[in-house]
Image (cartoon, rainbow, N blue to C red; front, side, top):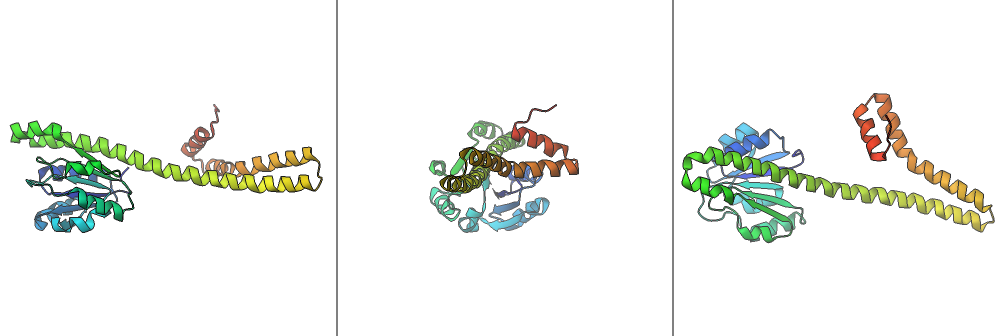
Length: 242
């Protein structure tokens, strides 16, 4: 689900290391590690085939990331609302998912007020971290669960945007076919051709044009023995066949 997603990890401590290894297994398009100490970031990056940048480069590189996960020991926020606003402008408001698992926060809470920025924190882990530093590994595991859930939601939403474009494109194609055939039918009627014959011809041609693509897809899948593809086509076309 992450194969078209660029992930930015901020920090190189134990929590980010666990998160990086977990995400690496899901094969994102790219992972970048940003850290104050470049050498430590490189050690982590080598394990997960990631790029490395310095924290100072965040303002100029933030727009490249779809998902940003941060966990540093900083006492002040590293990412502010203004930097994110600029990144969103560069992305033409393509959505960004921020997951802040630092205590105190690495990302200003105002970032969540931006329309195309989705900010999630793990304040529910704060008590565990504060009361018992020995429970850091448990907190990291809980953070991974939250990250997995939020990432799934985000990716599903992103995929739904793709489907909107696909539906619009298909609808436009159908409208083009309809307009072409209706224009021809009107012309035939104006020239005095029998109305019944014109309507039958219109219906037949419209049916054939609309059935052409799915028919070819079914034939190709059948020839190649692609059972899964055939089942998907049956489901898409609403065919109830034993």
